[in-house]
Length: 333
Ligand code: ADE
Ligand code: ZN
Image 1 (cartoon, rainbow, N blue to C red):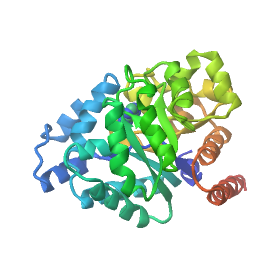
Image 2: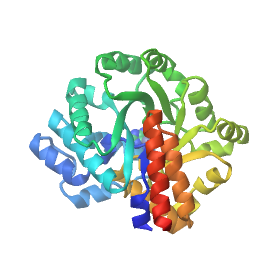
Image 3: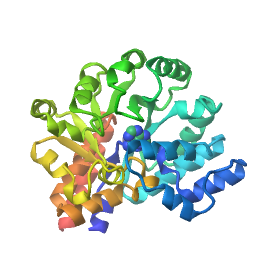
């Protein structure tokens, strides 16, 4: 099944670039930048990566991101992700980044944007774009300020998103920042219904104008919302290994993805923060096959959904769908 998964052309739509920082690279960059990490060894890292909820992860994740300081660091991070994703059959990626995590430490937009863009240009086998995320543990005014700072640096950015601590930080707080982004021609997505209630999913759609919902799994608690998501075929980017690592779901076997698919929702499968959650997109697909009994048709449907849910241009989407159908027919033959 692993070979089949790799040959499936797919899009990754929910991936935080800072969440691809592998422990090896974290130690290397800490050394290079003389940054004092709170971990001495891989064993310390393994112990720290036993998360109890989203916040326990975020505390470690922001600590790790502090080793990223130069354009070269951001280049290497992006390059390593794109190479790894390509090996899993990713042909298109829309990649989250958290500018406030870096600007707060005095690392400017020009530093990380140049590093990201150079790595994306050096990986032409994957079409890629960036999604600028606002940190919801900071204020709506901070998000507005981040958007204003970002304005001269938007080349390669396709959308804005909303991430970080969900509970107690509802989408309504970020209405103004999203309105600014819309004025600048950017698309909109938002994390909602990961740990937060289904009402946050509704507010993301109604107040922020989100065109895609990240996680969204708690939507299932509200049947009228499920019906709306189905009727409008709102894309939902689901991240099974993340949900288990952050204890939103006990085990992959208990994941609501089959129910979401059964209800006719437009779901894709993604890796979120693969360096922290035990696997890249290939492992997420493989987990569905091994633990939930997903067969080739179901995995192909998820890959097809991922392409259709993307912000890729119509021509690129059509090309990717053709590649997917060709891969499926040569697999049968
Ligand atoms: N930032 C990185 N990963 C995240 C997640 N799973 N939820 C919210 N914010 C995040
Ligand atoms: Zn996420």
